[in-house]
Length: 259
Image (cartoon, rainbow, N blue to C red):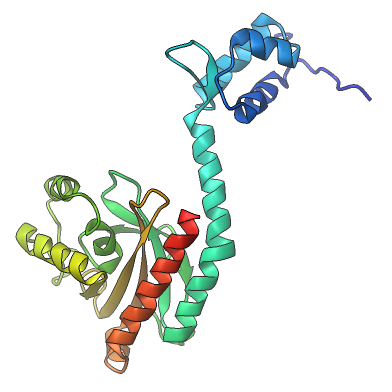
C-alpha cells in the first residue's frame, strides 16, 4: 500500500517535518534545500515550513558556510540522554548495586553539566540496612559541600574552580561545610593527590561520605559516585576498604561511559 500524504489546514504535508528530521539525522553531511525537497518529494513551501518548525525547536540548524541544513543540537542532546539513560540502568546500576551490597550503604551517582554550580543525583541504590540515608533522584548538591560535589569540583580546571568560588561565595550548608576559599583549595589539592573525596557532616549532619570521580568519554569529569553512611555505623567499618571499593566502582563506571 502506498504511503498516504496527510495535510493540515495550510495544505502542507503534516509528515514533512518528521521526514526531513529523519533525513538530517541519517545524513553524514549537510543537505541542501534542493536535496531535501527531491529526496522527500515535497514542495518548496512544505520544505521551508518544515525546516522552520524544526529549527525553532532546535532539531535542525543551518551550516553557516554552505547554507545547507544539518541536525540540530537539541536532537543530538536527546540522543545522548537516551544513550545515557540506557547505560545508567543496564550497565551502571548493577555496579552500584554491587557496591551497596558489599558495603551495606546507600550509593548515589551525581552528574555534572559544565558551568553548573551543583551536581544532580541521577541514580540511587539504597542501602539494604533498615536505617540509612534516603537520597532523592533529582536532588541538587553544591560542589563545595560534601563528597558528591567535591569529587567533581576537584577535577575541574583551576580557573573553573575560581569562577565557582566567586559565583557562589561558598555558602555554609552545615557548620562543617568548607566555606573558606583557601581551605577549599587545599581540600581540592588533597583530593587530586589521593584520588577520592571524603566528608563528615559537610552537607548532611551525622553523615560520612566517600566519593569517587567518574570521567566521561573525553576524559573530563562527568559525575561522582558516593557512599553515604551514618556516622555511628562508619566507626565500625574499614575506611581503607570503603575507599578501594568506591574508587574501583567509579573506575568501572568511567569505563562504561568511555566505551
